[in-house]
Image 1 (spheres, one colour):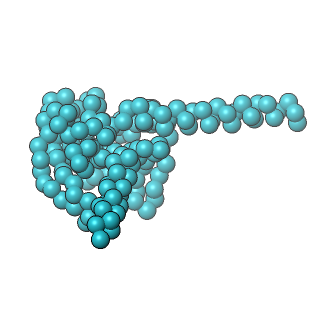
Image 2 (cartoon, helix red, strand yellow; image 1 turned 90 degrees about the vertical axis):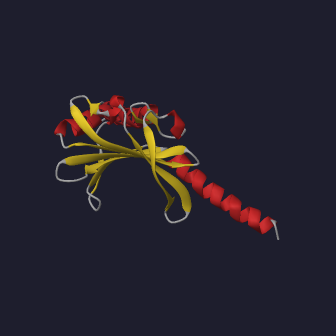
Image 3 (cartoon, one colour; image 1 turned 90 degrees about the horizontal axis):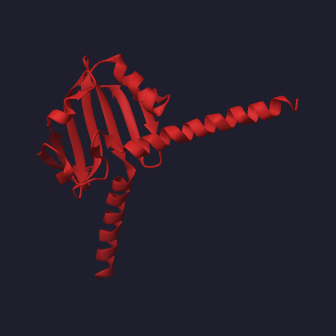
Length: 171
């Protein structure tokens, strides 16, 4: 029994280390190509304001389209649309729509490891402490990669609470 225990422990530790590397890679890449989560929108090539809106009906945000030759393909797979959302000009969400191609999922799994699956939303995802990358069908012929950055979303809530505190202190 003692002979197998070290082998089992080694196997478990390898699994834990592999899991940590996958989330580390998601954090390291931090977005799509050179569009990084948390960066200022004016650092993105080819951005154009599409609209201003309220995220979750309360946080002032902006939606931008991004069109630039550097972002037209992922390998041989065509990118049909890129949109980014910002709060206080910081990118907190990147949506990349590609042609439907199984190689996209295979490439994602080669980088980030096996994904988790949300049956209710029919979405594959990888998650770290700061980022979630969702992968799902967008339409009959397209896939969506959706990167979401938690620190900027947390900033929205902190800013909202600060505004409430400022009003309370002004009485």
